[in-house]
Image (cartoon, rainbow, N blue to C red; front, side, top):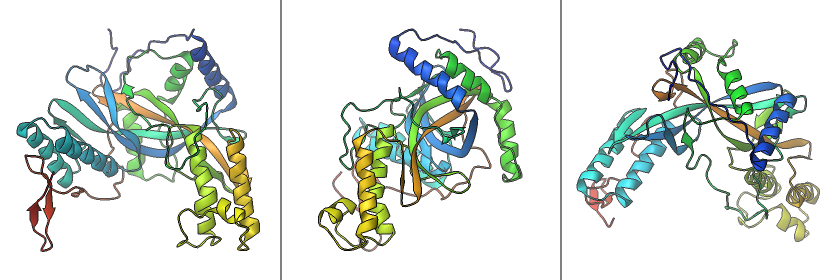
Length: 368
């Protein structure tokens, strides 16, 4: 395949495929409608994860740590854990385990953004989180976004992990709507006095060094309306239902405790629903409002509701990843780390045995 001019500043050609299968066509129609209704883009900031490339993958990389953490070091720590557990549970022999543990040791002491282990190349990758904004505010879930046939409201259950198994392939065919979005966002860079000079410079340079755009799968989060716009109220979720489930928990468990309606030390099983059901005389009106709102949330695919003056919405979050001649963009010099590299797991020997620390601060062998 002719990959086009993939030198710094060059761009790759895109293969555009018009969807003909009914479900794909419906998704494309939704995307076209959204482009007409949601005319602006609001950028929230960078997210980081880890991608891996095997020797025979050519241009393709696969996401092995979700692109969802707020600083590069958090992604490095997640890679540390991935390799540590692989050494503990999957290594076939001492040599393989040594290679994995050597990589772990580097990640414990250095801000490593790329390393190769056992023939696989790992890279900390950077994406931009953004949302579409229309006259009514942040874009909500689209009709064709995946939803469970039978919603599961059990706490702790999730549809799956974001980005699980996702392959980054710059040569994969895209739909017309996806191509238009990628082309529109190619020149996007930070602007404005709210950004430090080094952040602005890095953003402008990335347009030249990583001119192409790949779109990661849509995710969903809770947002709250403020006097000046909308603020984030949760992390990213795989589905709109998972975000609703988190909102349900927030309304019935976190908010009542945060407002002092339920004591922080109360049994974890106690929430607004149980208090209202027990006819508790402690702030019944506000607790009833939270319980009623959460019940409305469970009654249908509701994406916005107002409770005690606060408007909550399920927002549809998009992420773009820049791509250059050597693949996905990594952290920029101006990206801020909230912590330094450190040891996050107990030492592991070449036989896969965890070395537990004794009471004197030394290390003592234990069962793997």
